[in-house]
Length: 129
Image (cartoon, rainbow, N blue to C red):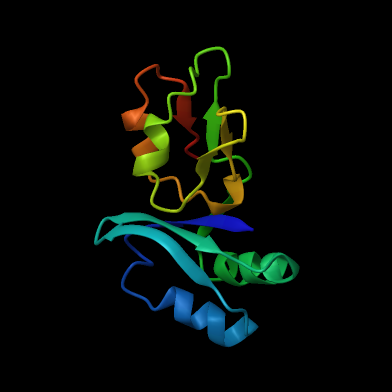
């Protein structure tokens, strides 16, 4: 499961992710991070069976966490299946089916927004929490 850690200025100087890994023993993967001294966000891949424990550990340290349940929305009425989004996706979320229609594996999405920018029809939207 993917979660977003919303970093605020008071927690950015601390080794928050390392503390949570040491406390929970969970193997976390950072999929995307944009953190500056004034804050930012980190998209973290958490093993599903450890998600509740990891989220609780982050919240105990003052972090705000949201789940990424459906990070990208495709408007099927707008999508013309051109595939422009496929080549720019850094994690392979988007691909063609056998019938050449576009499909998405949302478990891989890190909300980078590259597909949204590339789509000539505005058929994709990144959900921000």
